[in-house]
Image 1: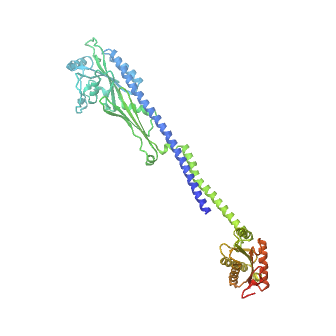
Image 2 (image 1 turned 180 degrees about the horizontal axis):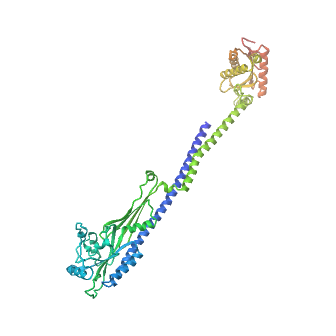
Amino acid sequence: MMLTKRRRSLVGIIILAVGLIGFLTQLLLESETHRWKTRFSEYVQNISSVVRNQLDTNEAVLAGFSAFLQAVDQSDTDAAARYAAAVLAAYPHIYMLEVARGVPIPEQAAFETLLRRTWRPDFELKDFPSLTHQPAQHQVYLSETWPVLFMYPELSQASAIYGVKLETVGYLSSALALTHNNLKPVVSPVFSMYEGADAYILMQSVSRPEQARENSRPNFFGSTMVALLLIKTGSILEAVNHAGADPLVRINAVLGTAADSDSLVFSMEPEQAGILDRLLLPHLNDRVEIRSASQPMTLVFERQLRLGDVLTTEAMMILAVLAAALILMPVVLFRHFKAIEMAELEHERSAYLATHDVLTQLPNRYLFTDRFNQAFSRWKRNRIQFAVMLIDLDHFKEINDKCGHEVGDQVLRAVAVRMLQETRSCDTVSRYGGDEFVVLFTDLGNAADSEIMGQRILEAIGKPIVTTAGELSISCSIGISLCPNHGESLDELLKAADQAMYDVKLLGRDGFALSGNNSSVRIQGFCG
């Protein structure tokens, strides 16, 4: 019972230890996860700041270019080119600066003729669908046409754009219409450029007073213009990468355009996370709205945490220690409890050997004395008689001398078993030394009960005993004393029982006698 209880305690402690180690592991992973959430938030703020700065720069450059166009001479393309060169050198993410000027519809032919005579003999006004051999797209019809007359840098692959009327470009038509009477810049949707790659245009209307001009000089910059900033979407992505983009973060940048439609500026797609990553670790996400006046942009960030993120070298070392503790702690506890159990078993064995006879496993005189004291205490409380029976085997020495001590030991063990069979669980049978036994009979109704018990033990011991030397027969002499009739101490009762036993031996052995009553001597086969 005690061992079972202790084993349950051991199991409980092991479960508690495993639970504690599991809790510490969970705390470690949550700490690493929280660290990554903080890092992710800082990353989002950093990238958003980079994009916001670039958008603000675009607006500032466009404002400066518009201010320049208000002051430049209407035919001074060299000054415009020098200005544009300085701008692009300072802000290399800007792909191109362009200018389109407004020409009244009725004056288109005269304007075309003027520029052929003063600028390019092959100049012509073009519709964008005809140039690209694409179907005509929806356009907003205006009272003026807006041909592109200035581009910097002058790229050979983009030279065909000179003279293209902006209102015929489907994705620019609505934005161009919004620039009229609007002091704020207007942004176009993202589109594929004629020379390749994706871009969007930031445009602003520029007006200035009419200027006197010579017919011999080209009229590039009239009184009504549109300044255009051409920005490749890849330049924003480059800025993000230059800021230290995390390749495991998905970023979608969406531009809100003047036409109330959204355009995807760029998208970064990381390598897909594993199944365990998605099952065990959180999916981080954030959304940033950049409220630019002209280029409102939404940045959506997503990152699936991975086991490689949280299982750092330090975390792995801590987990290794916890794993070792998880393995060693139950082993140590088990060995500790096993040692305690072994010690208790050894203690119980030592206690048993200290109170029992090694040969017969019967209580020895020390345990018998303790049982006597208990019986005497009950007698004092309840006045219920008990008896002490002293048993001595007759001629036992002859068996040892003739058959050997091994056979003698077999006889002693058989006698002990038979006495236990004839007594009750409340009685005590003890080997008191050599071939002498003592029995403590408790809760007797009267003296006759002790004699009945003496008769039963006498008959049981007298039956043949099977040994390695063959069947042997042995008798015994029994003396009985009663408490309190013959004494109130163990010594007095043993002395009285011994005297009764001596009387039996004088009468020929193989019998029993009650102390102080020679008439009660019973010899096997007759009564005396």
